[in-house]
Length: 183
Image 1: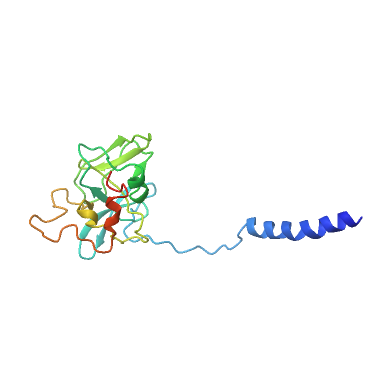
Image 2 (image 1 turned 90 degrees about the vertical axis):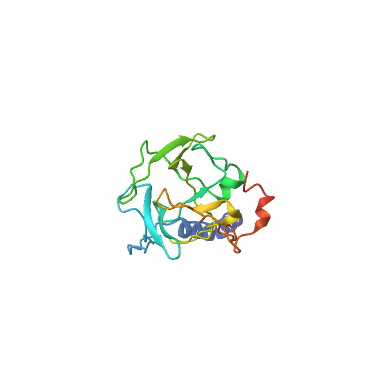
C-alpha cells in the first residue's frame, strides 16, 4: 500500500507537468509574422525586397535576403559542409522556378551532392546567411569579399569595379576563413 502511495505521489505531478507541456495551445489568436518583402503567392520560392543602401534583392519564401558566393561557378555550388551550415543553400522540391514580377533573369535548379535541388539565378547558386535574423537583414553583404546579396538585376555588379572597400564587412569574423566557410 505504501509503495502505491509513493508511486502515485511521484508519478502524478510528473504526468501533470508532461500534460501541460505537451497540451494543445488553445490560443486562437493569430501570431504576427514578418512578411515584408516575402513573395506574394503561396508556395513561391523567390521574391523581391528593397533593402536600404543596397536596392532590390532576391529573397526566399520567408522574406530573408538571398546571397551569391563568388567562388561558385558554372551553376554549381562549392559551399558544402560547414560552409552550408552557415550559408544554407536555397533548396526546393519545385521542378521549375517562376521569376518574381519585375525580375528578368533566369532561374534554374541543380542537384547538390546531398540530393537536394538548389535554386540558381543567372548561373549563381542562391543561399541564405544564418546570422540574418529577420526579413530585410543583409548582414552577410560583402562577407569575406566573396559573399554578396543577390541583386534582382543580373547585369548589376555585386561589387562595383575599383571599390577598394569591397568585402570589408567589419561585422563578420574573418576567422571563418580557417573554419572551412569558404570551402
